[in-house]
Image (cartoon, rainbow, N blue to C red; front, side):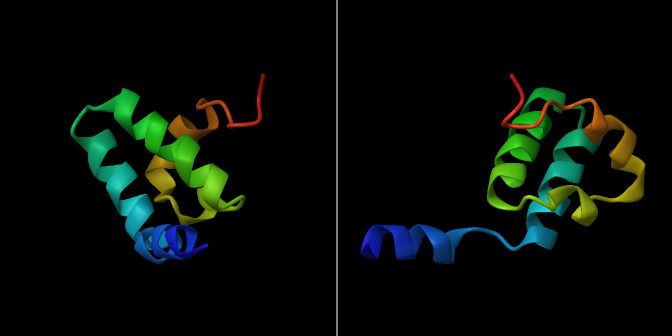
Length: 68
């Protein structure tokens, strides 16, 4: 239980996570950006609403973590 609490406390805020994804995308690191987006979506079902508008089209092409 303590480890889970520490991990939860260390998780970035949705805004910070979205900024990190945007930075990876801007740097051309699309594989890492997509992996981060999948993790972000696992943690926050409404994750896409935190993404900048210019990433929404790209994000729509990234499979959701529960997709086959």
